[in-house]
Image 1 (spheres, rainbow, N blue to C red):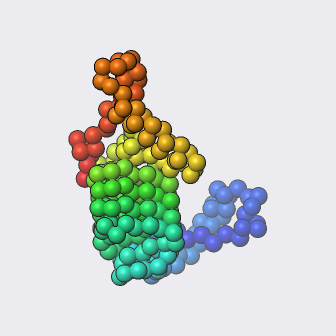
Image 2 (image 1 turned 120 degrees about the vertical axis):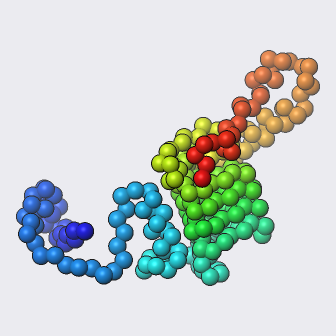
Image 3 (image 1 turned 90 degrees about the vertical axis):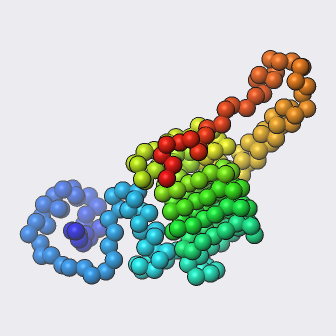
Length: 216
C-alpha cells in the first residue's frame, strides 16, 4: 500500500500525475494500524463487519442499546422485530414487525424494512424501501437495485412494492394514497361491471423474489 502526504494548498492547482512522479523513490513506512482498501462492494461489507465486531477503530453512530446492537437517533423498531447482534439501524429508519436483521447487517439512514423481511449479512443503503416477506442475503441494496455479492450480479427491480428508493415524505404519502384508492376500487367494483375499467385497475404481476436464481 502507498501512503501519500499532500499539501492541499500547493496541490490545488497542480497536476496530480506530476506530483506522483516527483514522489518516486520516496522512503517506505510500515503501518500496523487497521487498513481497508475499498475497491469493491464486498470490501465495504467487510469493513461494516469489522466495525460492528470491534476489529477496527471505527464505530457505528448512535447508541449501543445492547452488546453489538447499534441504533441511531430517530430509528423505530417494532417490538416484534428481531435484531441479532452485531447489527446497525440507522437514523430515522423504520423496522416493521416480524422482521429479522442479522449477521453484521447495517440498515443505513431513512430506510424502511417492511413486514416479515429477513436481512442477513447485507447492507441497505440510505433511502431504500424493502418490501414485505423478502429474503435479502449477502447483498447490497440501493434504491431499486440489488447487488448479489455471492454471484456478482446486479438486479434492477421495477416493481415498487418489492424495492424502491424512498422519495420525499409528500411523495411517499401520495404513493400510499394512490395504492389505497386502487385497492378500494378493485374491491368495490363488481366483477361483471365495466371490464375495460377492471383491466386498467388490475395490478401488474409481482416480481417473484423467491424464484430469483441469485438468492443467497
